[in-house]
Each structure stands twice: as C-alpha cells, then as structure tokens.
Image 1: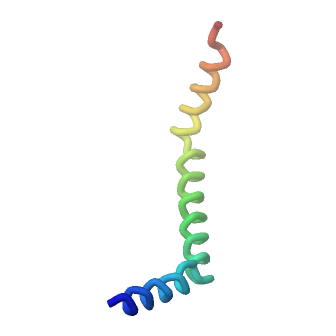
Image 2: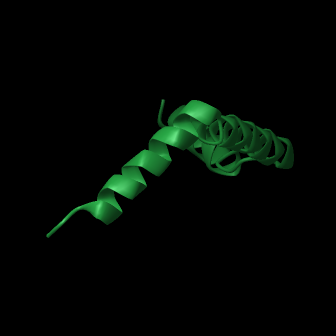
Image 3: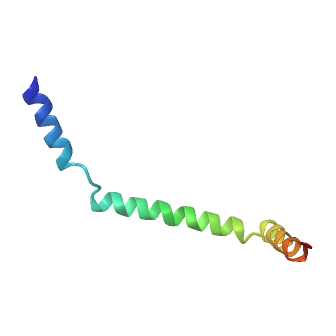
Length: 62
C-alpha cells in the first residue's frame, strides 16, 4: 500500500505544471474576456454613465 501511494505522489509531482498548450488556452481566454469587457465599457450607455459618475464626482463639494 505504501509503495502505491508513494508512486502516485511521485507521478503527481512530475505533472504539477501547465504545458504550453494550457498556457496558450489561458491567454486566449483572458484576451477574449478583455475584448468583451472593452466592448461593454466603451458601449454608448455604459460610457455615458461612467462620464456622468466622473462629472458628479468632480462637481461634488467637500
């Protein structure tokens, strides 16, 4: 039993990191999310709302 557990632990250590294809898929997913977020933030309604929030913050009196 001990030898089986030890062998599995050794095998798990060898496969601990991501391979290049996994890094590539992670980068593609991150870029896709960034593009969607950029489209949402630069859309007309969201852009106008953000400008209104900034204008309100700048016009606020202390």
